[in-house]
Amino acid sequence: MIVSSPTVMYYSRVMGVSAVVNAAGAGFKLLGPNDTMIKSTKPVIAVGAVRTGCGKSQTSRRVIEILMEKGLKVVAIRHPMPYGDLAKQRVQRFATLKDLEDHRCTIEEMEEYEPHVVRGNVIYAGVDYEAILRAAEKDPDGCDVILWDGGNNDFSFYRPDLTITVTDPHRAGHELNYYPGEVNLRMADVVVINKMDSADGSDIELLRKNIRMANSKATVIDGASPIRIDHPELITGKRVLVVEDGPTLTHGEMKIGAGMVAAQKFGAAEIVDPRPYAVGKLKGTFELYPEIGVLLPAMGYGNEQVRDLEKTINATPCDAVIIGTPIDLSRVVKINKPVTRVHYDLQEIGQPDLNEVMDHFLKKMGL
Image (tube, rainbow, N blue to C red; front, side, top):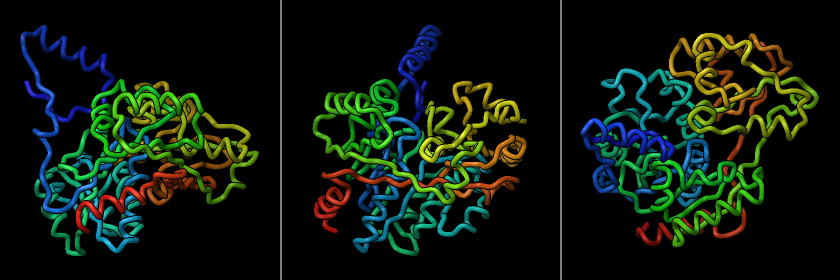
């Protein structure tokens, strides 16, 4: 039996599955980078993480911004999210918001693609990763560097010339206890400690210790995720519903997101619990992931789930809705209450920083 690119799993679960397989008399193999990575004709930067929700997308965007400022054409390729017609999703190219509509993207897909598009760079996705890479290398707008924007914490599908792994002090210890997140940590040339502005000092130090133990040769960059709010007056003293990125709350097991940080920072009077008002598939999500608590995950893997999300938001009695997802959710669902968005980007703290890393990378690659 061959198991390829498994989703992130706690090590006890991995070995529990192996015990079932072995007890049945069978064997299995976990494919490694030499088995799975495709070689590109362009320089490749891979951005991965130790868990979902660490800040891969923020880091990818920051890398792209730096390279674009240096006059380079960067084409991003996203880890697959094959939720529709796989034949039609063989190779997908996103350069405009209309492309998101034409490909009938789910909310999760839009959360990953839209921030790239609005910043002016092209992003590819789909299911045929050899064909996707070759198309990206020959993109009509030009391509100097390929950026692998990882997801599900799998290691890169392409052989990288530089590997950046993002870690999260809010989940200190997870970097050594989940597969394949630890693979990303051990392979990293650069490790980013994100969210230091909202994490406890003891958790940051534990994370530093674990990074040194697992990969003492990696360059470590300190980072923060400062937030910006469209309308803070909609939060202060108000009863708010907090909508966060779905995967981060579910299989990412996060207890707090950008929306909750904003609610706390700007003095919300109450975080309204959406669970009594959840309908359809969202009700099932709360049953499957009870640890989500009073946050509402922006689940939208199909039209039915998007409708359930809209109905749940509109049925929840609150003064305003805080959108902590990376996209303008009000463009996707009709919300009958005042809405304020939370924006967040990676901000390096001190040195070394990603600009220094990119300078070294470009010199190494002769760009």
